[in-house]
Length: 187
Ligand SMILES: [Zn+2]
Image (cartoon, rainbow, N blue to C red; front, side, top):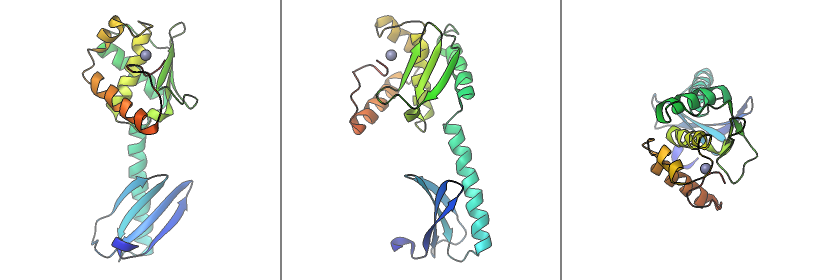
């Protein structure tokens, strides 16, 4: 395997595809990262099969914990939304539910002010936490202001990363070839 100078092969553990790469240059260090749909685990070439197994499992647990932090559940989304509403909207926006959805291909989020429900596209999962916070806050603000007028944006100004998050999302949309109207993430 080229630069690794050792064996590389693929294991399947549960539904995770794991590629273990043994490196002669590595003495003690083990590292792991996600690449596309698989996980790459780098280990020293002198590791025994038992050491490899132990380390692969440990690294998978560590990565899974990181994924969980970056990908909160619906319940965690609701707690996060309540906290954001308190911090930036004086607690005025009161969402009833907030959920990840898979059926929004051209919008990052949407909401129904009449019943206080918010939906966030699963495409936001894995983005930096401050981008997710912006998308949540954007939808929370719509519970108070339906359109994208001046009052809407002035409510969002209290969140310090609004401009940065909008730039981030525009960049992602442009890279993916998605058409998103300027200034809008939802309609
Ligand atoms: Zn909007």
